[in-house]
Image 1 (cartoon, rainbow over the protein chains, first blue to last red):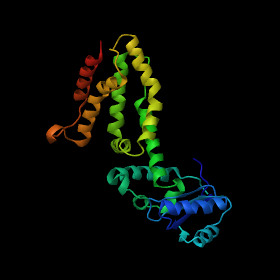
Image 2: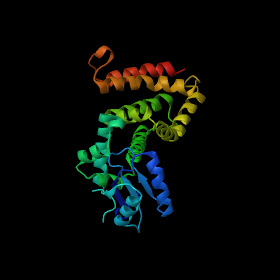
Image 3: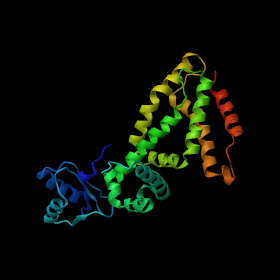
Image 4: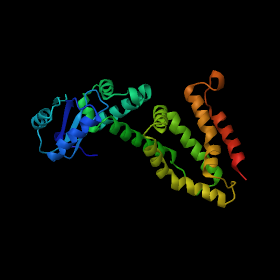
Length: 74
Length: 196
């Protein structure tokens, strides 16, 4: 399992339910973001995106525009 | 930038197994694991997609590691008594030296991860153990019987003894330590029972 740390973007969100996840899934699809997961079992509902081109700011803007909180996970 | 710090990954794995056994799958969280490891939650999410992914990956890695120990020096072509003896030796070693992992695998067996875990075990053991049993029947060393019956008689007593040992007590709470003598005398009885 080779991972390029630079390509992994992590966020703390409130994408909490399966419905939220489905909704965000559509948004991701629209923006051609293919490698993404949300940990619904986690208190921080961590959104994880693997992308060589996206920036943290772009993802935060996109998620917040759709009504969810989103901040960089530290 | 380093892709993956092997020591850190090992630490995460060890602590994850400890916590999964201690807290169960429900009580286990990425936050608790991060604290136990002294790393940030973000670090964990670099290695694993989510909690599910972590449990599944660590579970499968451990199943593969345990399986390798169980098949060490085991030759499916060996005589039945020799092969079964090696199996007992390996399985005992595996559980005695990795009590936490053994417990975690037990937990996995009774969870939603069960299917994947069984499948992996099955894939690894099917060939060597199937061949071994088939050889023993063909050479008329043991009675022909369903695989499930064979497995239960061959290993059931071993796993009971190992459970008593890991819990430190046997029936009605009597203190118990598994000695070589107890182990191998039970083995002799099993062998006698299975042999034609």
